[in-house]
Image 1: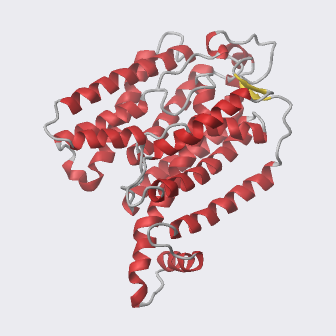
Image 2: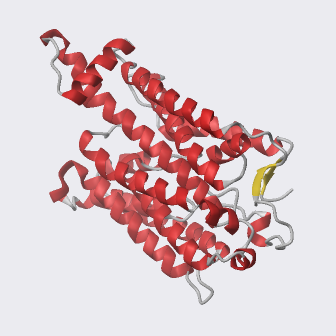
Image 3: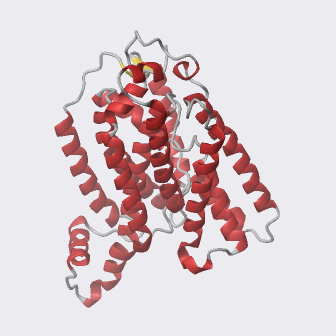
Length: 371
């Protein structure tokens, strides 16, 4: 996705004007503790409710009982086996994966917007998702990574994402280190290159399976979620969120520009390299299991800033919870609105994200990198 350069990215503000690159002006902040508790409770309740909804509706009380039996190894009656399998084997890993991906995309969106100092940046601006798509389609067409079994496509997508990360890093590195402008422009250009490569692979493919795979990776979905696919992505996302949360002050300082960051004792090149690696790993892990889901990492960080202010330590604590809660309900809509078919996740997130983003731009007192 091409990202227009914001005022801050093209012409950084002088160090004397110490305000964040984007945020709410004069907004009353919501108390952080009660908000986090409310979001955590809402996520827990929503997960139980959503797991019980679908073609076969199961009451929350029964859903909770089946979940408890699955966690503790408890017993259920013979006439409940089918409903238990629906809850535990099909819907639970899907909802957990949705929550994990939503949390990861939200956190990466916050970090990337500070990393490239662009309020219009999202987790996919650095070309990682396009590289993952190439890897997934290549594995599908060639039949490679057969040893990975059902996880071959996800493995290929992750390897493609890491290859894209390395290429973007090498192409954007200069004697001045990683600069926001070079990084975002290299990412955008590489995205176009990867998309062309992917289109060529699909064009010369002898069957239509690669085309279907391309559609999946371009709009996202959790239909392939299993218990086996959860541990790797959960580990990467949780570790990444913790690390990014510990970089809250660094993210705050980087929004003022490299000169101001240096005067405050922050090595922008080193910090930007670390953030680039962490966000790329998180993006690659999420895209590998869900495809590219637009607008989550772009819009949610801005909504959270309105609630809790622009301080990254606060934003990074709340955004993953909001992302997880949002994605759980989006996934429910994707599998119920046009049942028995599934609506691609990207369709729903775009339908929600576009009007919300336009509303944010028209909201008085909110700055997108400039006036």
